[in-house]
Image 1: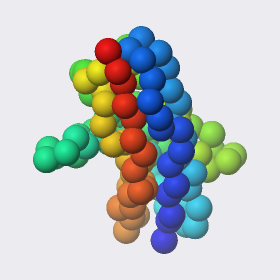
Image 2 (image 1 turned 90 degrees about the vertical axis):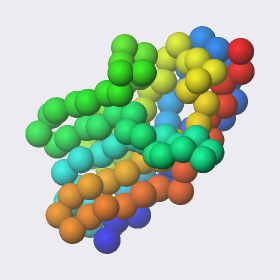
Image 3 (image 1 turned 90 degrees about the horizontal axis):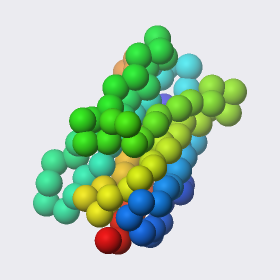
Image 4 (image 1 turned 135 degrees about the vertical axis):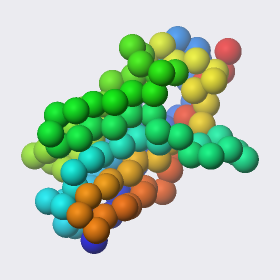
Length: 115
């Protein structure tokens, strides 16, 4: 069992930056991928970035070059650094952990970007 808690959302102007943080507790040794998703109202949740413990990193086309996912294994945290934010990045962002018998979501954090 893994529990996830996000922090770092908020409201910014276009062009500014935010950093989201996800803190994991519990059976974190079973995690093999740490992700960030986002979901707009009435739409399907979409993958923003993925960090696999084998070192592979993936980004959605819409955020590549602006967002960076990273991990602090010593603190069981991962982050999403979001630069050059755009109004279309406005969404609820969720961290997600996948692994052995593991599919866990955080509670979500709102990111709002004004033009």
